[in-house]
Every structure is written in structure tokens, then in C-alpha cells.
Length: 265
Length: 191
Image (cartoon, rainbow over all chains, first blue to last red; front, side, top):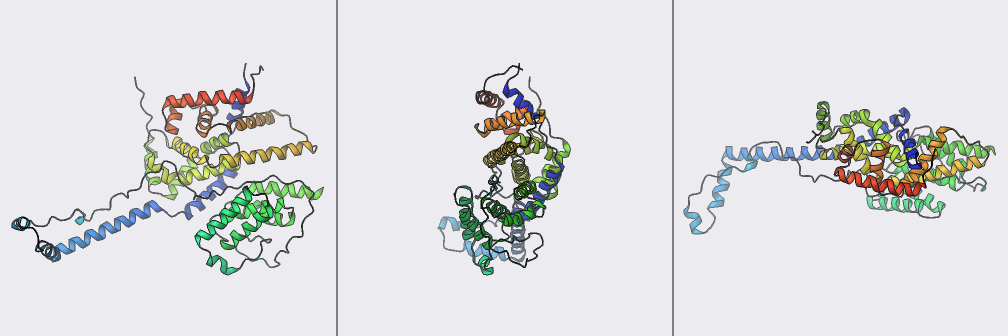
């Protein structure tokens, strides 16, 4: 006799982690993320080591040239309690930092949980492809000239953004834009507003940390809004695996396939 | 009688040291050595391939920082799976939504006349989907223990090392997880 749970668990056991294509894509993505991440721990160690060596060298130099004794004498000749002055000043003991030792391990509290992402959670939710039929809205005419940006192809349906905006936006403003877009996308009920919000974010930070997520999300919104032609254009680079190490490649391809089926009907 | 704690393979010591230094090549080596196991676990845990990839990515990305807690009581692979459990918290909800969306799409496909495949593979998929839906109702602590013990058939000692909890707690969590899952999956069936 076996119950539903046992059979379902057996089904789970058959799932494998062997997937060469996904493994390679995730490896590329990991490499990119590692390149972007500053090696904070090592950098801090280096800074502390340099400070320690610098301080040690300075102190050693002061003792060698007699500067340290002069400083010490000036210190002990200051008016002080008589009892203290009666005792001959003992030769100054070199401070512990005098030795040019490597800096101590930086005091960093071990984290309980690895923290990878900032507070903002860049969740990408592929939404279900909407029902066919809503007549496509008149879409804004895509720019006729595409700028060749190499790694990150521009999405043609993006409204033109003032070039100066990205320079003017502060990190706090950018974060606010991202938060608003995220909120509208996942919790709001107005895809058009969410699309505008993603556009605002992308205009402020076209190559920012969440730009890839933002582009993918706006592509999904174009699908939801029935702007299929623009959606196809936006999804195409993802489906071709050109974005951020084949980010959401298969999902984008599935959506494109489905969009093409809708066209056929 | 006490059993010796399994020692870390000597080759791992150097790798762990390099990971602690934040060496990128060490992260890559670790990825190549253990990504299959971590991916399998992540897929079993969340039931969505994209979310599983996110978990794999995040776990290895977090490794140089997380490895400072590594004491060598378990293997590096077990440790990475422990990191994957920690990072999976933020992906479970999105995985649930994606699975729901995929199921809706599949239902529409069937409704539109695409023949439903009644193969064993599909039945397994449906069973697994039911289990993931039930797992969604469990706290992550119980969910992870269930997947590690039942789906991956690891011993409670090993799971205790991975998660960093006492072995008795593993057994308690497993007990509660199975009880809840049985309630959700319905009555027993004879085959």
C-alpha cells in the first residue's frame, strides 16, 4: 500500500539537476555577478594592512630619528601631579602598533544569512499570456534608427528618455523609481501605469543593476496590454540569449512562441 | 558510542580557504563541482526551473561571504545546499506564482484541443505539482527538511549538519511536515 504523499515524493526524486544549457547560462550569469561585485572583504583587509604597515613604519621612523623621545619628553614635562613627576619617566614603551605586522583580520560580524541582494527584491514574474483578442492599441511608433549598444540591445518601443536624466537622478531617486515600478507591476492593477513606471526607471538608469529585470518586466506588460508587436521586439533579445547570460531565455522564447500562435489564429 | 564527524576532504580545505579570500575562480570551481546537486535540490524545493536557477545563482554568489561560517563539520556540498536554503526564502513566492501561471497555460492548451499526454511522465509531473502546492503551505524550515529527508533521502544527521540544527529538531520538523502534507494531499489510496 502506498499513499499519495509517497508517490508524489517518488515523483520529486526523479527530478534531476542535470541541465547543461541552464547550467551554462547560470554559470555565465554568476560570472557576471561576481565581476560586478566588489571584493569587499579583501579590499577591507588590504586597506587595514596598508594602514597598519604605514603606522608601523611611521612609528619606527620616529624612534630612529629621536622624534618619539622629543614627543614623549614634551608630554611628561607638562604640568602634572607631583607624585607623578617624582618618578623618573620610564623610557617609552613602543606602542603595540610599532611592529610592522600585517593588519589584523577586519572585524566583520559573521552574517547568519547570506545577503546578496539589496533591500529591493528584483523578482521577475512571468505573467500568464493574456487571452487573445483585445485589439492592439495604437502603439507608439518605434524609433526608426536603432542605436547599436552592443551587449544590451535597446528595446525599440521604449519612449525616448532625456539623456540628462540619468546623470541627474540620485541613487535615492532611482531606488524610488524602481520601488514604484515594482509595486505597480506586482501589486497594482494598471499595466499601463506599470509600463510607464518601468520606462521612468529605465530612463533614469538604463544600465543599472535592475535594468535587465525592468526590461523583461516591461516586455511582459506589453504582452498584457496587447501590444504584441512591441512585446515581440522586446522579448526577442531575451529569447536569443543576448541579455545578461541568457536571462529568462526559455521563458521569453515560450512567450514568443505563444504570441506567434496567437497571430496564426 | 560516538560516531566521528565526517572530515572535510583535504582538497576542499584549500578551496574553502580560497573562497574565504573571495577568489572568483574558487567560486567557479565550487560551482562546477556542486551545481548539479544544488540545482536538483532547488528544483525539488520550489518546483520551478527559473526560480531554481535563481537560487543556484544566489547561493554561489553568496558563498564567499557565507563560507566564513563554514567549520568543516559537513562537506562543502552540504554547506552550499544550506546556503541555497537560506537564499530560497525570497524565491518561493515567485516560484509559486510561476507554477500557477504555467498550470493555467497548460490547462488552456488542453482546453484548446491539444491532446493531453497521459504518460507516466505527465502523471509524475501532476503528482509533483500537487506536492509543491502542498509544500507551499508549509514553513520553509519544514519544507526544506522534507525535501532533504524524503526527496533526497538524506539521513537526519546529514540534514542536521546542512541546516545547522539538532538532529532531534530535524525529526520533529519532518514529522510535522509529513502530517500536514498527508492532510493536504488527501486520503490514502491503495494501488
